[in-house]
Length: 165
Image 1 (cartoon, rainbow, N blue to C red):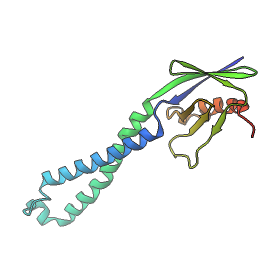
Image 2 (cartoon, rainbow, N blue to C red):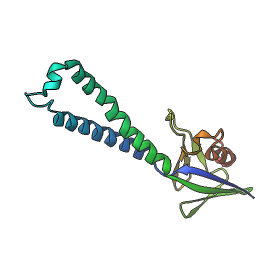
Image 3 (cartoon, rainbow, N blue to C red):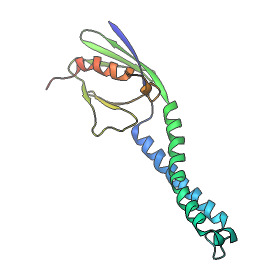
Image 4 (cartoon, rainbow, N blue to C red):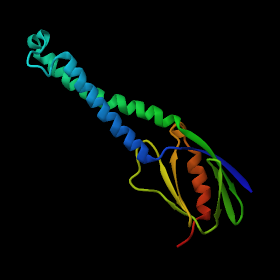
């Protein structure tokens, strides 16, 4: 018996996409509210921007990347904190995956590992298909700085239990 401990992100990729979209929408709305606060939406714009119209253009187009990048950065920071530990016990005929307070027995030849394409830039996704369930693993962003992710090592070892078609 061999044990492999690994880390993975507990959030699904769908949650990341939803958080990014909501963050960008909120950022654009805050940008719009800021421009209304400065008086851009009224017919009587501020005197400063009447005198310096280039500054108004710089402000408007400068707020666009800020309203996009700041929410993305906040979502990335939240996303990278959400790691969990799991353990994989490898036996001759089966493997036991311990994660989220549950044990999943994987018989040799019953597993299908998928590596969805295209992969995201920030993280790696693996899909483990068993006869009775589907498990999605997302690589840890904290471990991304290391040369070898523990999830990659665990999946490589688990590939010996994959069904051969």
